[in-house]
Length: 467
Image (cartoon, rainbow, N blue to C red; front, side, top):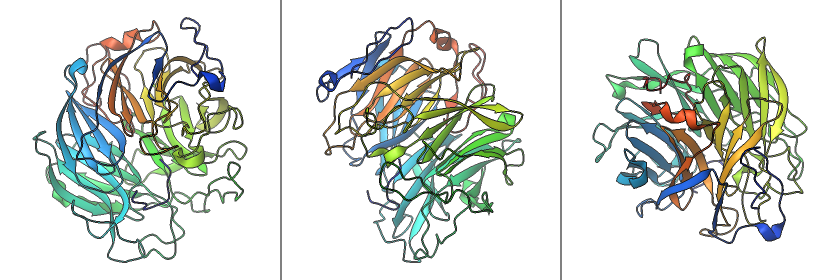
């Protein structure tokens, strides 16, 4: 989600066999809270957000029989061994947004991009203009799922808006690529220019020794300068990256860096090197996230037009802004192929834009499930990257829990036969898709999933450590 830094805080005509959606009129927008979905999606269950976590849910990670859901106020662990009976195991109150989470071994790593008076879980908000303020990574021991234990913090330049895990080849350490942005010369630890990421090395046998080992400058030319125009026509300048997705077994990564989309060579994880970059000065306002297809020949970049707090899924904004952009990787360079945006127009009170998703592991096809805030959850087949098609969807009517333009799904990921959606206010939703294009994925068992650390699909029944 794009928000001011350090802030404390329709129905479509659907043809299941053809994968076709069509715009609808405002009168067809679902009633508040009403659930609508395509015929090939089933709503399995919803687990309400824990009362102790009083802020919004954010990103997710998975490991074994557990799902981990971040929240601006901490994180929760859910038992998903029987997805139909998904249940809360524990919650940790530890304020500091966004608390995007990743898991590796017995460690959970969370991002804090909210300037605090110290690194503790009892910290309070404090201006980033104060030198002693803290933000960065928090590391927890999750070996006991009922009682996670906070063991280490690492302060990073401009905090940690998001992060990405890159295991070393010997599996003795894991590198954490920290993405952050929004510098100011009034911030002692986040001055302009901020053209870098921070790389934290976490020794797995001694995570208390985690530390920043590199701060590579990705944009020595300063990156895209941006265009200052009234919404919705402005374009963000590049002052760091918003999100990076790594594909370690292929030695590559893709960065969504505000005004630039980039490819990296990460074969030396402490020295990532930009190998290609692309800009879209016509339609993209804020390069938000990236996802590779399975063979690493395509990248989907998302544009978070309006920062996740605007109604951009409407006729006025159109189909090419706030959308996905599909690029083929041709001889190491990015070649634009097409845009995709959900065709179901949303109400003016509904924040809606392309957001976080993951692949559904179907050999021979490129299919992604994705969150669109109050636009719901969409499943898109982009096997033909020039003609992506939505094949399934799930959404609720307008959510006014915290007022207009502030609700919906932050992330939607596929894990071991089910789709999981992290909703701002409504908690954790579990969905099941039944479609000839995706059913082969039911036989693929993953041991873990951090969506920003991709690995090739395991064979049916072969649970791999990468997953």
